[in-house]
Image (tube, helix red, strand yellow):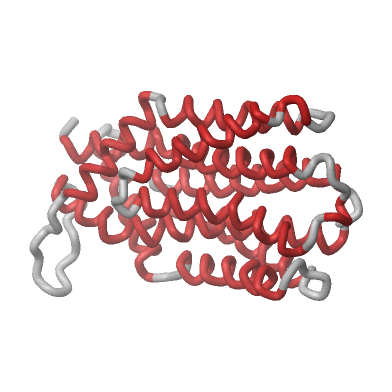
Amino acid sequence: MNHQEQINACLRRNFPLLTLSWLLAVASLMSLMLVINGTHSPSSMSSSDILRNVKNGVVIPTMLHLLLVWGSTRLIWWLAALLVCCLLVTLGLYTQRPPGLIYYLALFCPLAGLLVLNSQGYRRIYARLVEISKAPRAKRLPGEPVDVLRYPGMAAFLRRFMGRSFAAFFLTMASIALATVQVEYAYFAQHLENMGYVVIVILVGAAVCGVGAGLIANGFAWGVWCLVAVAVTSLLMAIASVAAGIHPLFTATSIALPLVALVLLNSHHHRQFCKRFAVVRRLRLRKAGR
């Protein structure tokens, strides 16, 4: 197996860990906020409180992962520090913990996230991201396609296309999170226990996004329809709850995110990204004699 094939196999095998780290970071922040607000009634939470909680719970992990994929690999320490802070704050609230499983979820998620960040698979994908970010762009003539059959060409291809594709992936997951919170606030604001279902819906939506991205990474271009389905569902949910939204800015953001994600998923860069992985898969199967 040459160097380019090793990078392909590493990204394909360990990509679910990148999705899992995002899920655990979001779940850690959101469950911690539920623990902090567990002693208050739903009516005491203002729209600005909900907006700030969702912004911290979804936007911060999303931006950290986007910058991590785009080459700011040192931000992995920021992500680890975020999980450690969530764990320490949760431990400090032990005597005031609310009843139910939400406190134990707030303990489990940062611990699991730290284990994922310290796992061998995550270290491998982190090393590959560092290598890709430092790889020089292949010199080519205008209009000449990138050669994905050689490592320099594949590294240049990933450096050129991977940022926008991962942006579409993380924006799609962020859009389902914002839309779910918007619907919960619009129709079920008087029931604080529904926040547990909000977390479940967000995790299911993110899992569907992870399956779609995994299919794309394995050469199945039709996996993009999983991301499209989540983005369209998020857009419909956001539109259905416009009249009773949390805040005009929050409502506009919950509508804008899936629209931007759909534009990125339908862009030429993302189509080329999917096609190139499909080509690599066919060449891999042909080489294996299948």
